[in-house]
Structure formats: structure tokens, C-alpha cells
Length: 163
Image 1 (cartoon, one colour):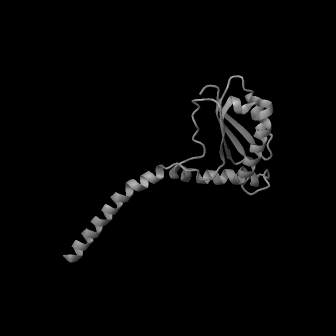
Image 2 (tube, rainbow, N blue to C red):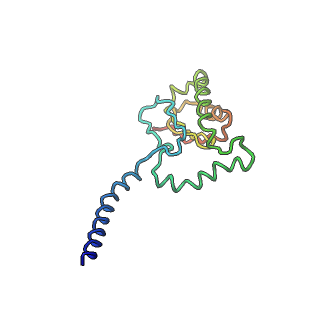
Image 3 (cartoon, rainbow, N blue to C red):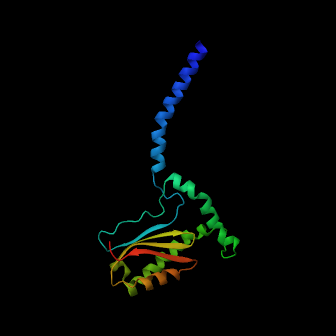
């Protein structure tokens, strides 16, 4: 009888522990973090009301769901012989530094800081351009100039002309 009672008490204690831990685990999973340490740069804020993009921030479950695909994408340029480094994500911090220097040089000719609210996300040699631009901003020239940065494979323009 005591074995039965102790087994029931143990099972009950385990159920209580799971019930207490479950909401905490669910909350932790909903926390958005930059789990891949991808560069995320807020480079201008001239247009009021332009909503910040989500950027590289994701939940733990989203990160786990993407893990295999991210590894595959990262290594594919090495396998194809298009990268000097073994993983295309390894370029991103270096590209972020180069893009920052390029942006500083571009401001004199394009006045992009005065005409935009922009965020850049760098992932596997791609630059994702998010935010808002004014109607008179030469977006095509700006995107082209970003694409000339060393090791950048592609610039993906996701900007809008309206906040």
C-alpha cells in the first residue's frame, strides 16, 4: 500500500511540476531573439511613422524549424565554388562594416539619410533593405550602390514609398 501511495505521490508531484513548467517554457519559446547573430542595422530615421521590420529576430521554434535550411543555404556557396569561406553567413559581419563605410560615402551624392527610414539585415551575403523612402529618393541608384559592396551577392529591396 505504501508503494502505491508513494507512486501516486510521485506521479502527482511530477504532474504539478510539468504544469508549473509548461507556461514558462511556452513564454520562453515566444521570445524573439537574433539567434543567428545576423547583422541588423538601423541606418536612418527621417520618415516619421515608418514601422521597424522584424529583422532577424525569431522564436526558438522558428529558429529550430529553419536550422536545417539555414545550414544548407550557408554551405551551398562553398560547395558550388562561389565562396572563399566555408559558410556564406561568415561574410556578414565583414559586409556590415563595408556597407557602413559605403553608406557614409553615398550620403553626399544621394542624401539618403534625409529621405529615408531604413534597416538593413545581412544574411548569407544578401542585404535585405526594409523601411520607407520618400517619393523623390533615387532608390534604384541606392540599391545598385549597396550591391557593389564586396562579397554582396544580392540586395533585396523591401522598402515602401508610404509609411
